[in-house]
Length: 167
Image 1 (cartoon, rainbow, N blue to C red):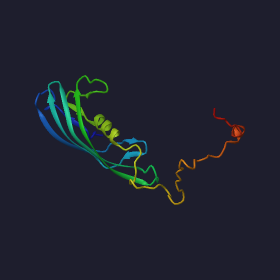
Image 2 (spheres, rainbow, N blue to C red):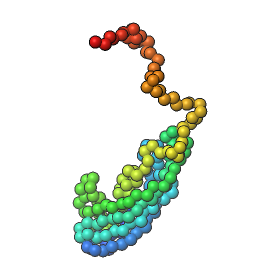
Image 3 (spheres, rainbow, N blue to C red):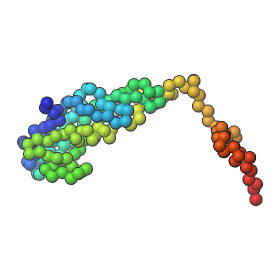
């Protein structure tokens, strides 16, 4: 199976100043928390530029995502667009640059990392989402005049009788 994000780089890599625009599309299986990319294709519009021994890749990556609303747990989704600017070299530095093959460059690891950082960890279906049933579970805010008192734990009932005097 051919991978969608491998780009032939023989005409661009190792040629300072060489530049090539590329649009790639393909599926990418990625999930973060309750959010995951949909089955739609991830689309990357990028420019490859030769910089001597390295190759820079810059552009935009777009993908659709789906997940559960963190308040009401209903399905929600959207689109994420990420600016990409990465360096590929024959001997990559772990966590800083990506591997540049002899005749090709695999953009998938860079795309995967950029999209994983852009996906919402706890999505909302809307900013006004009130949760599953706001009328059935009203929120009460205790004022300073009437402090909230949680039910006492029976194991600590002896401490309820304890009183401290000022002074």
